[in-house]
Length: 119
Image (cartoon, rainbow, N blue to C red; front, side, top):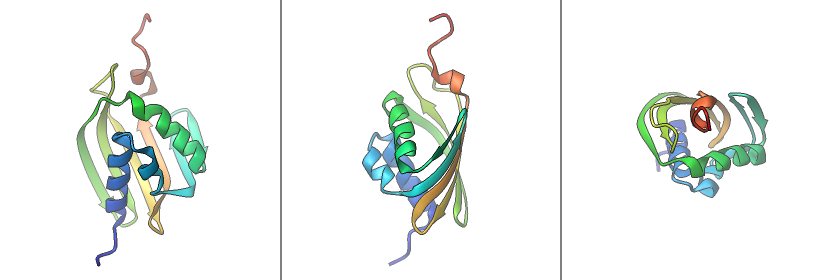
């Protein structure tokens, strides 16, 4: 059997969380994950779960994923679609170790996912 690559793990994780299956996604995340995201640094699986689970219900789709993989690092570029935007890009750089995601750097424009101006 061919061992799963970091790219396989990240793709499975991303497919799960963007499909609303947080438990499957979290099975691919290390207990001591570190995540840097706009406005917040997260440490540990429970903090990360809360962050991801809070955003997943807002998703209405995912557009145009581009992927780059280099050993244990995988980058995804995509358009998280919500009721407020479908054109705001997001990027994530994952590091995988021992079959789990150990680090994530997430880049997106937080203001694009809030309510429209004036509301």
